[in-house]
Image 1 (cartoon, rainbow, N blue to C red):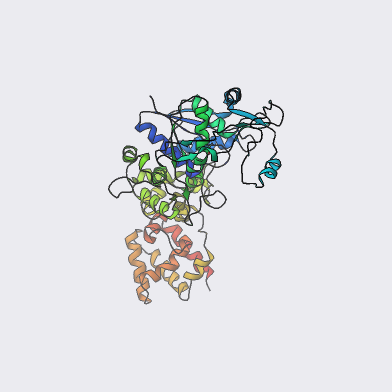
Image 2: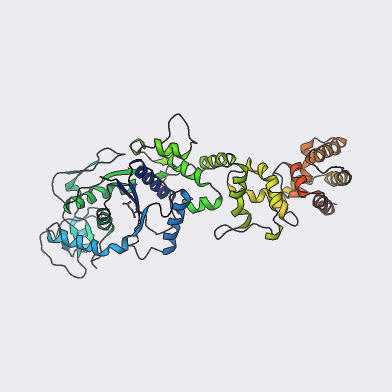
Length: 469
Ligand code: GLU
């Protein structure tokens, strides 16, 4: 039997990092089993779906390494409405489902609680189909439903505690529980690997598989992803959109490696390993069933490691979207014509060791491409203390006469200017750095000045001097 797994996102918002993780787990599992990965877009919630979210899912999957064309699909749940309805009808005809006209209020009035669930009032009334009548599945009164879950063992649910749940609404449209099962059957899915939040649906869904006469899949419910307060990651509170990480300059390789480390680790106390090792070593059965902490700080540090490990030319290429802007990344603050590829390549190795996400490249190199540096007020106040004017005058004079405009000479010269005034290099550098780059921290100063060139450096030092009394 060929293993067939599916990833079944609903296109109702930005693509969640938790979804990306489930997708990767499905992807790897399929590869390990020589199986097939199916992408199914569950687009039946017409009120909440938008085509751009679907496109967002496809491109985010692409980015993370699940490339279009290398999987089966995408299928769209909305195209299978006839199958969903036929299954509902079959369940009704076989006596496994019945029509119900109870309002929520009526059920509450009878049970005395809004939490009690459905009380089975219409079970044996034999109501025919009709406008406003929901179709309910008749769950068994006795026995247990045991599901085989690769991560959770064999969770077992008492059937009498499972209410007669709705499978089609009053307007005849099948609900998620049924549509999802029918699609999995239609698509020959053998393993359902999905988020833990669906575990409560699983006994109901397995009952549907049984009632429809098809062998249920093996399940694997992967743990929820939580923030540092152990709260489930939520789009209102946390940064959860994969696209947001991509646009901030996380590398796909770092991101997918990190996602796989949530609740699992490769052998030998290693975290940063080639993707091929993860593909070989990952075992769904080894995923820790407890909630997994999505540690943004750790991810950032992780990404910095990946950035540093890139060959310089790849780093230069990876920075390009932030240096030019794209349809989702804001353009940099300089004029496109001012960008100088060679100047960037000269400082790129210096920046590569200093940034954790690629978007940080912009504030590190903007001084090279802006006509004049954008000087932060706080930086100016901090650096331009007493003596700064005189130090800038002396630096300009010394730099004007410099025979060779290279980092070493620039450093030695400023060191001498500082020493004459009893200043260590660090102190003497501060006003120069702010005058030239606008910031108090940044790339190594003298290499920066070398690349910026004599004329522009001197012009900026003079301009800063003029601002001082
Ligand atoms: N569309 C469902 C979701 O995004 C899929 C559930 C499942 O994987 O079975 O949560």
